[in-house]
Length: 382
Length: 122
Image (cartoon, rainbow over all chains, first blue to last red; front, top):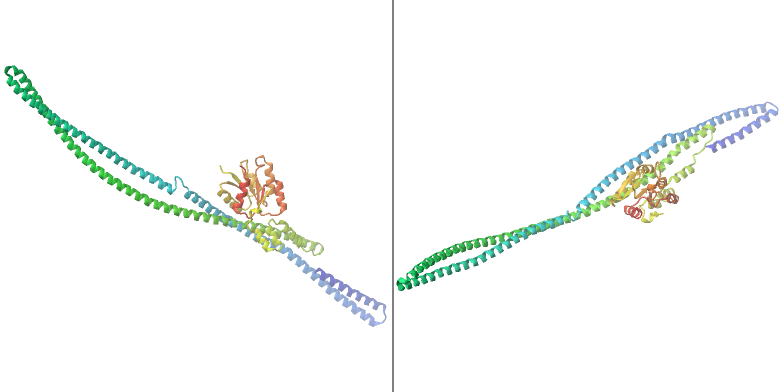
């Protein structure tokens, strides 16, 4: 625009100079014809001068409109652009923060689940099974101990039976002694009768011995009767005890079988539960790992936010620069363009990330590589 | 007793991601949204390591390191800069201020934990 105006003004100055020279020649010449010619030239000059002023005015008006338009662009449009960028950035940050928070909650809950299901020792299913197994085997051992105790008692009762037999024999011996004594007393009485009056005292003694013998025989018989009764009672008790022992043995055997059956089924259930718990743990750990990986990838928000901030701040610099351009035009009519190189330099100076610099340099591949998750080698220790 | 690590970053989501990684490894975590907020929250309590961003509002990470080095309670606390800033000049500033390591975002948790385990105070 400036170049066009300068060229136009130079051409118009040349024309005006030629017209002025013609008028001067006419004024110094003679006759009417030259005078008429000079007047025509002056009139033509006046017309051309008016057209020039109109063009100048229009050009200035256009330039003022252009500068004002650029100023309005900076003042009215760019803040809206900037606001949109900031709103988008803020919305993305809020959404990603909320998403991250939810994921963090899921990771925590999975962690608690893994800790709860992973507890072995006193609380695991295997431990419960082992504990129950031990308890039930203790019950079986108690049953077996009771049976052993009964067997001992049975043996002792059998031993008592042997004593009863001895007692029966002893009672028989007492009866035999009484019988022999009675025979001796009879013989003594017979001999006393043969002796006559001298044997009377001896006959009395033989009589008393016979009484004692009869008493001993009765006592021996009672003893034999009692022992027979005891023997009968003990035989009945032994038969009952043997029957009871057989039943107890059968019950203990049935109990042991039932306990083994329960334990086997319990083992099957606990093993199945342990297996499914292990599978759940593996799956939970896998899901937790996937979520953590997703969280790592959500770090893109931080990078995008920074990049949007840098662009926004650069856009926000433009309204002031365009206003300065307008003020300069208003003051002196000079058209001063915005220094794009300086603005670009400011933008470049605000970069923090290698991928921003690569994008600025137009290297898309390098920018993509720089934005990837860094390797351990990217850590610098001081 | 669990060791305490402070993470300073103006990005909420970034603080959360770092927090998850550290808590899963058994550390207690304190959070600060920028340098000034971190100084306000560090009220003399024992912190075994500080992880800080560089570019933050109110007080940037380099200034935070300088301020911490002035405080007797945190003078020897190791500080890791976790940042998107890759310029060598900034790294040199961090080193001069007293940071122990410079780590680029985005990070992966095992990598961060390896750095933490290497530097955390006993």
